[in-house]
Image (cartoon, rainbow, N blue to C red; front, side, top):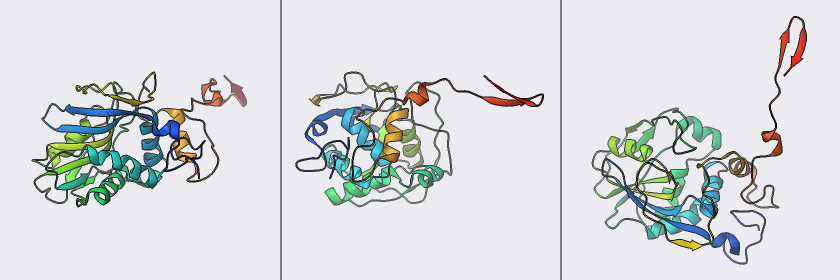
Length: 254
């Protein structure tokens, strides 16, 4: 069995190898402009970022259990119900997983709290992953059930907070949220994280860079390493693209 995060080492015990088990930083908490309090188990760096990508783009459910174990310690006092923030349906079909739902279910098993699927997502909305300063689509949700008092929104990553704000606005009265990770560079203030073990010296630009997402999509549940830790963009991706078109009966390359 290989490490769930890097796939290049065999863990002595547990799902992570020793270097990956120390590659975390705490996420802290932030208050969104509309008053929603967001707590995050980890910063979106290092091992936590890889685990989110394994879950979100590789559909590895074991990653949800590892992240949920840390989320349980950050669960707000008085929480009664876990409400996952659903993924757009087309993306759920594309990647074969709804990460927030998997996290909520794993967190529910760890804490005994019920999971209420009170939100429904649209079929599609513009891509949310990427740099915090990039142009982002506005997610849309509709309420399919009433969220009880003490309900907590569950999501995988918070960056600008727009997704959680939209979900909280749909479920009037919900003002608590819990995420697995908090991406740096958001437009809201993030509490200074306390470093735990080894963290990346330079934070990644966003939550879906080219290399690690490709690794998460293709990495096996068990087996040898297919991609190195913190994989950079491939040499092929860095080469200038060549285009061909038909003009006056001949092919011209540029």
